[in-house]
Length: 435
Image 1: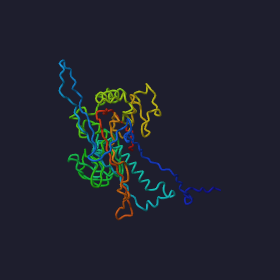
Image 2: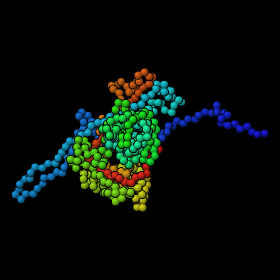
Image 3: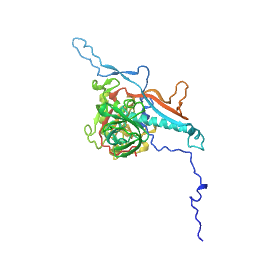
Image 4: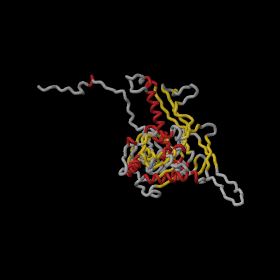
């Protein structure tokens, strides 16, 4: 007699779902540059408190001169170094979350939800804020997420060039589903062509195909993708990043009311791989030594003397090539690397810590003097409310509420010439979060 086999389908009515009390976040929340600049301390970045007409500081822009010798005891003519005031303002950044009161009520108990809805929204908003700040710190203050390379139709476009930089990484590095963006017409003084929410991102090499939920007409190659609200856009409205602070490509001569074109001493040291280094395909410690020496001679801040005040920032691909260049000379041990703020491990390159940052533009090595950077702070991320009005605002006509998070901040290069960079390395392997 054959046995009757009972399957899971036959007893599905008596089976339970077993839930564990942990919650997994699949997106990498890595912010190495933000972690280094967030807190001021001796040897760390300066902190400025914005208010009134803004923040001002004094910069000596030329060499002190005037010593002479005189056999007859005559004094030389008066000579004094040029001094100017630099200034920086504040930028406002925001995150919004909305929620239905029924959903709040239904997630209060541990039996009903992994986490209460309000706590989930708050945590998620703060994560979005941190990742947004990390992105901003690698940008140029313009908030460009990508440039259009071709237009398929009014809801499908292909983009490249994160931060507006050709070859800076995969086109979708700064883009994801759910983002509300505007398309700016580069050929017409960056006029807004339209706004839409991204519903799909498909990455292929350094190109990304975006699907928009709203048709936008007249899009063309070189048009810009930027974050937006229903009333305006983020273009030129976010804090400074390394691209404009360090005058990458000599495209941002003017900074803090001073011009590197007028005062050459105020400029950053810029080197090009393969032109100012022996090989664009193989970065080496001697490239870094050369950069350090040039920065020291230009600014008086010597990375070889005060290595703990300097930080190298690059991509995982460049970090790997640098490690490969010295594997025959010393052991590469991840566990024994230098530990920085935030728990990030840094590779020792020419005596300096190098952090690998997938937000960094491809092919780049930055050398930053941390004490010569400033985090301009007026208000850290908080729920926005005024004098006890409460942060949760009723959405008219609905059983729902909205909460807004905001921060008022900026960054500054208080001594611009104490930083440097090497750009143009061959860096084709994309170790980043795009999928």
